[in-house]
Length: 195
View 1: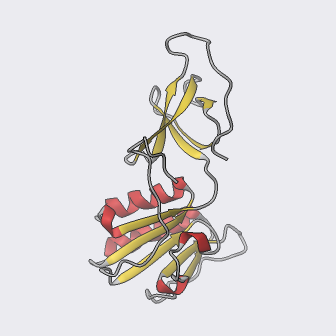
View 2: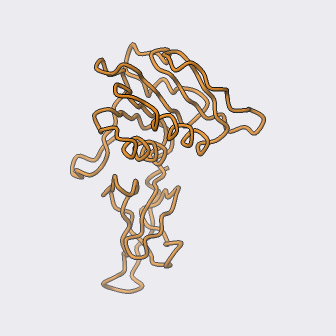
């Protein structure tokens, strides 16, 4: 899933354990590991897996052995990310972080890993699910989630924005620029592109 002409556009590949890693942690934006997120012949049992059940009746699993095949379930993504920050703060070298899910989920996981000192080579991601984008208004710095159209109205400054394919890894968002800056009021019809 990549645009060949846009170098900043993330490229994703099915996940396989890095043979240089001593421990493999896979975080998933959902209750199960999506089969399409894994490379051919790889099973979830190759990883320690953290998932999100998103049901208030499902308690977070107690801390489990940090080993391949172990599964830990969280009630919500913020709970998973909080535990991930704590885990990475005490982790030693050799851990590989993998993530499967929507683009915002992947890049939030990337940010946590990078702040903990993991290099891009120690992380791998598989994009599954919705194509909806997190966008960043370059005019007022508002971040908006779940954008599925080529043009949208900024929730911060109200400007009509064109959603570009330029992706900022630092901001974990696609850039959006005012579409009628040169001719105010001239805004083309929005297209549904990222459902």
